[in-house]
Every structure is written in C-alpha cells, then in structure tokens.
Image (spheres, chains in turn cyan, purple):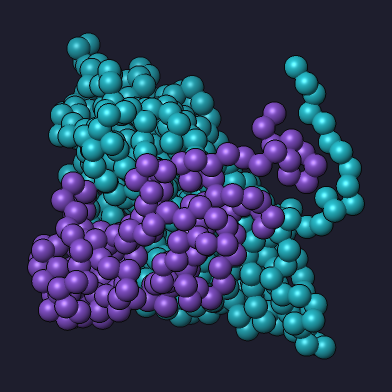
Length: 404
Length: 166
C-alpha cells in the first residue's frame, strides 16, 4: 500500500475559492472583509465575502462548499435503503425529518405508502416532531448567542439534551438515527417511552414560557432584531424560501397541512405566521417568533401522538415495525419529486429510477437551507455589520444541508 | 387543471412546436418544452392568471449517459394559489469538451431560486446557462476539473499536490 504523498509547489498556496470582488473593483472607501469559514456566527463552515463602506454592508457574496460531501454522487452508487444514513447527514440537527421525507418518497414510488401500519406512522410523526423541537431549540438558542444572550442558549441546550437522550433510547444514536426505514421502522418504541415522553412534555411546557420571557420579550433582544432584515412575501416566494422564514413573511404555508402527508391530517395544530408584533412582518424577530410558536405546536402534536400510541394504536405483541419492509427495493421506471416540511423548510428529493436496478439513477436533494441562504445577500445590502450577523442567524441554516 | 391543459395553453401562445412531448411516467406529470422559448414559456406560466406558477421548487440536471448522449434539466414548478405541480423538461445534446458545454437559457430572471440551482447544475453536471448573472462553481473549488455527476466522470489525479484517489 502506498502512502499519501504531497509534493510542495508554491502554486498550491493559491486560493481555490477566490473572492468575487477584486481589489481593483472596490472604491476608495470600500473594504473587503471575509466572515468565515471559521467564524462562530456563520453556524458552520460558510464564508461570507462582505464588501463594506465603513459600518455599512454594500454587498455580500456567500461562498459555499466547505462541507460538500458528494451526497448526490454517493446516492447514485448504492441501493435506496442504504442512502438513509447519508440523508441523516444533510440537516444533521433534524435527521428524523430528513429520513421521514426520503422514506416517504421511496414508499410512494413503490406504491406501498397506504400499507404502512398506523402505529408506524404515528411513531414516525412523534419522533419527527421531537426532532423538530430539538432543531428549533438549536435555532433559537444559537440565535440568542449570536446577538449576545448566552443564558437562553444554555437553557435550550439543556432541554435539547432531554430530547437527544430520548431519541438515543429509541434508535441508539444521538443525532444521526437511521431509525425510519423504507416500509417501517428499525424497532418499536422502547418499553416505557410513552410515559417518559409525557413526563418530558409536562416538564417542557413551563420551560418554553420561560424562554419566551427571557429571550423573545427581552428589550435588548427586541431592539436588535425588530425591523432588521425585513423579507417581503413576494421576494421570499421568488427566492424559493420556505419553512418558518416564509411563514414569518406572512404566508400561511405549511406542507404538513397543504400536502397532508403521513398522519398530519388527523392531528390538530395551528400554523403560526409572522404578524409584525414588535416591528415589520418578516423581520428577524418574526422569524424567531414563528419558530418559538412552532415549538408550542409541536408539543401539541406530540401530546396527540402519545394519546393515540397509548390508546388506539397501543403496543401489542404482534406489532412488527419491520413487517412491511420490502426485501427488494426496486421502483418502476419513473421520475418522482417528493417534498416534506422540515424544521427549516421544504426538503425535496427528485428521484429517477430506471426499473432495472435497486440504485437510483439520480437522487437530487432540494435543500431548504440552500434556497433560504440564497436570499441573504438580497436582504443584507445597506444594513450595518452587526445587523448582518443578526440576519444570518435568523435564517437558521445548517451547512450540512447547504453543501450536501 | 392538468398538464395537458397547460400544454394546450402554451401551444396556443407559442405555436405547436413549443411543446415537444408530455411526460407521463413522472410525479408530478410534465411537459418537454423546446429550448428556444424556454424563458418565455416560464414567464408565461408564472404570470398567467390561470397557471400562476410563482415558485420553482427544484431544478435537477440529469446526465443520461454516453449511450443516450443527452443531458436534461427538470424544473419542478409549483403554483401556491392553485396548489398545482408541473414538471418542465428541456433536453440538449451532451457535449463533452469543457469549451463546448451544452447551453440552456437561464430562468434565473423568472425565479431567483434558479440562480443558485443553475450554478449547482453548472458545477456538478456541466451545463452552461446563457444569460446567468454569476455563473461560477458553487459547491466545488473553482479550480476543480470536470463535472462529477456526469456518468463517465473520472476524478483528476492530483488536486493542489494531493492525490485525489487514494
């Protein structure tokens, strides 16, 4: 076996991702600042090339790809079921939701989506909503941290830890679960999970109120975020912005309700939208407010799922979560686009199957963070650098999904 | 509204040669449109009151391989007010040379979503989008060679002095 060799050449020191603006393009007053790729406020390895005039942001050029792991290329070389662990690694703070979307797409291609037992579907929704809570906790907590509030971050991480431990109990992993399988689940819920989850809900409800009082109605926080980074509804739609960001701009658009997939039509929940309570509709405060309200709605969904899972579809001896898992996953030749509501927006998969093979010919992930991030330059022109950090934080992207 | 209704609307506006085929084995169903008036068709579909496709959900470029010798781009349109999906597809010849990549008109003026998605298609599949405001590689480094999602792609041997296939 040969060792990996590196031969030095001065040319190798040239940047492989040069800036878009060259020094000669800038005027006398302008300055080019790189924020990232190793900057805490970029939430991962993302680099912003910011052109500033004093304190004012003139233009922003995001440079992506520092976390590119060739998801689509990998997916073209392995069977549908083996792609699931890779799907986890897209939005790694909302992995259950990714799995749910992907698995739903493959099941619909196979035509088995109506044969899945109800208990399986309820467990899927339960774990997905728990994960949605965890994802929003990261979003709200780190957003507070971005603009200088440290305590909410610690509180949110403390509550997220409970969720991660519960999901670890369910699946064996803290973040990247591989729990939802095509046609079923890895295992049934562990014995005693429903009770533990109910205790957690009882614990969490007052904590959510505390978070609201501590962070969202805090005067310093409101002044930093209200009327900052206002995203109008038309601009949001044109840029393909989805999820809490689109709802904060005032459109009541949630795929859980619009598409009504899985058992969501049987559940009762509201869809919060931004109302401009302290500023303008679609500002940074609204985006975080929508996420906070969604946490409350997720708790409602979890309660209803637990109710069903302990009464109507309760644990029985003959329930086998793998009963419907197909031995061979070979969809007919077709193109299929599936989408689902992730914590951060619309996660879509474009599949092409050729009918002769277990391996997808093409599996494109339409990532919500990718489109949500693309609107940042548009709403950041002309703001102060400090506000720019507030805007970036309010988008709530995960680089694993932006770069894939 | 079905995809055949939309087909007849487009044909009434742009002539019978603008829609080449319908796509039946896809979900959502769709139309293969001619590359010549792609931008106009997209604008028409977006602004027409009967269709109002105000968002572009997804843009997928697919290499059909050396044998078929074609590359296609699939546009998943979605109309929020009508809750209706449509797939648009354009098919072009699969040119291999870096200086002679297939050319497709950009739709980034119609939907801004396309701007980054087209950069991604250029980066990974190797399609030039004519009229795109800022066509640079987006996920891979600027000095990477080749387009990885081509079916006959093979990695370059060295990148900045590091062996790529180890």
